[in-house]
Image (cartoon, rainbow, N blue to C red; front, side, top):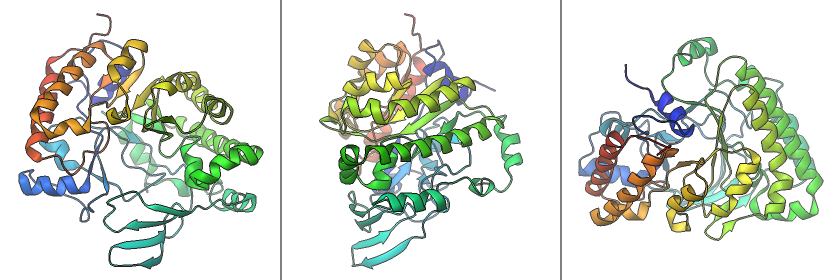
Length: 399
């Protein structure tokens, strides 16, 4: 048996020498996979249900499945098989967030749109084919009374065993102890900004930072204590390879909140979760956030993060500049999705990737979901070239 994805992952993020980095991809639009099947991608596994045009389809670069957040996300098995990609990270089968979730409730619908309350309690209006972001109409926490009710009814550990998402936990543990893939502690949607956006809504959250800071801190205190209690229970059962967090707290202009707010409302809670995980032998802590994030790196490092993804190029991120400034930071992603439209632009990205792989701490893949305008021919060219480079370039951080 050769080196496993788990061993490669730990070596790469640990800035250790290894014969190669990982072959992963972040994800795909449903539409692009539908087109690729028509253009020649063999359909060996397919999907449990028909793909929707704008839905996000998981690649191995992200944790899968998402037991705390969204059971409906599908996985690109045929892409993984066709390009011989490595096994991606997986969480422990446990729900760390709302339990029970809300029942999906359709409010109204037209031929192309639907208004509904989802399993996360958010009321949204969206195109049925998910071609764009939904319009957010309401969030479950609008006042302190809402929070107290949700804390009591959906964010308690009164039924701890009910939060497991497999029937036989012991059977899962027996198999997972022999795993060849990295397993994450925490995971989506655990974080201290992104989760508040889900619960409160973005606009209200910004007001509450100023108008209701003590309520925000009470919410964060409760979530942090709950997540620590879960982590204590699960780390007693099995070892974990890394901690993973979700934020999505930046746009093209940078962070959505100030450094002062970050340090007040996020850093103390992250340090608690990360310090606990470190005490259990976990060394790597990865945060997922979109937008321009280079100016936020010092804040994430202060909080204890050791790696960031996915480094959207069109937002202004430059992973070579980041590597020069932060030589020990784990970097995952950073391949410009807009470059996949021609072989010439793909070649330019591959030159950058070759330099990055050799320096260590880097797992290359597209900087977000591969969009519908990427042809099967161009994606094949990109992915086959990248696979060749991964096989050929040894990771030598000390050189």
